Image 1: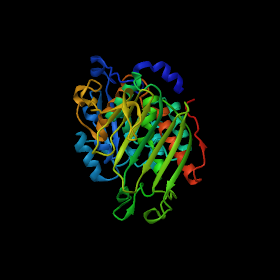
Image 2 (image 1 turned 60 degrees about the vertical axis):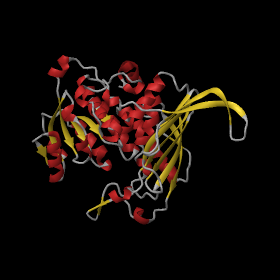
Image 3 (image 1 turned 180 degrees about the horizontal axis):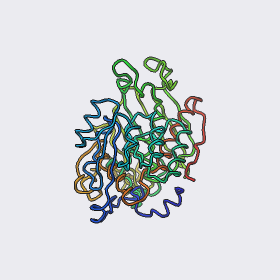
Image 4 (image 1 turned 135 degrees about the horizontal axis):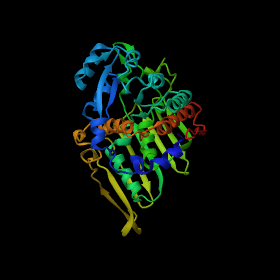
Length: 400
């Protein structure tokens, strides 16, 4: 199904357009329909809550390492395990898989799982190249199986609030936006037991989805053009990385299909606060997520009273006030068994639930293949721009 047709048919089902409760199941479905899932990847994969979702049964787990397989078995109270994804995919009882595997393996693992007849939830990003992303899309459409990307920023409590504001029209037109993902010190994860991991030298814009989702999941815009600059010259631990990436940090300037600017920064190195945050600037209201963990969210509403600036000039003054983000995971957006804190600002329970319910309700999930492409591909093109000194490049359209 083409994205535009999907949006027309989905109506208010998708939480990307609003904030209606995601689940809409009946008691009959709770009893009659169960999704049997296999979980692959004993680190990130162990931080979700499939065993708490009413329509889900954890059928099996898998990791190449025995210690991580055992961790998954303990987490999900599941005794069945496999030494590899290839073995797990042969299990006819398994309906779906969660691929919490290294980023360079996502395309290969996703395509193999779809072809094996399994629904797929995959960690971010969708793929490492445009060609990989295109092949995944073709496989999703050919197999007819559900695909969802596990993008945490979509379900952060502040992002859910921003979607609510947008649906209510409180922003007016969002004329510009910005997002940043700061993860200084990440290079400690580049090596394990003296050997390089998949993270070694990964280009920042090849991991863009924690930023791109902060605009796209709120307004539905698509990123059409980009100019990007990088910081770094391939020095230090960047030497001899498998991606031939010379940059520690990258800053991209996007133009959307509505003509709006969107600035994105992904930074691995520097005197930075850890952050996964966004800001949406509108005609009537703006919303700023916290910087790091020591400040508070801020709402700015347009001028409603008179004031003076620091030069003594009288002017209309915008109202600036702190905003306490609701804990949406406590609401009926989730089934009662899942209303608790979870990883990445409460997002893990939402991702778990939305994937399973999309299968139960026989619909596309919120972060479907079209959204996954829209979050991932702009970053791939942005990195190409940075390698060309900031050349303005066009981002391909995958919505048809």
